[in-house]
Structure formats: structure tokens, C-alpha cells
Length: 45
Image (cartoon, rainbow, N blue to C red; front, side, top):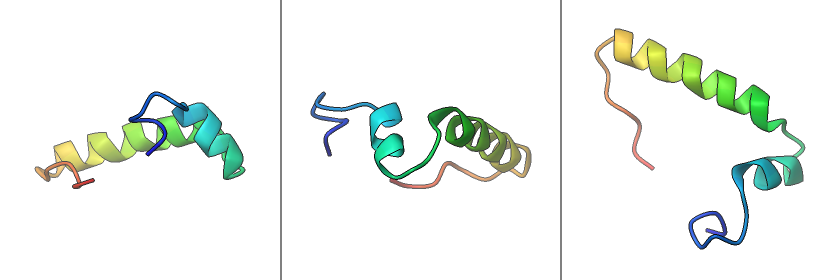
């Protein structure tokens, strides 16, 4: 992936998909907190 290779950023990749980086980041933070509260591990990926 371009991000791992240092050729892109999450912000750039999400913009290409028509998504806002800050919106996605906040959602990921909420989902991570919910998983942790429920005793679930991080999703693979």
C-alpha cells in the first residue's frame, strides 16, 4: 500500500475516496473505545 511505502498519507487516500480524514479518524476512535469497553480485540488488518 502507498501509505506503508511512504508514498501517500491517510488524508490523501481518504480524499481520493471522497472521505474526510478527520471524520474517519473520529469514527475510528469511537469504534476502538467501544471494542475496548466490550472486551474485544482490535480487528485484523
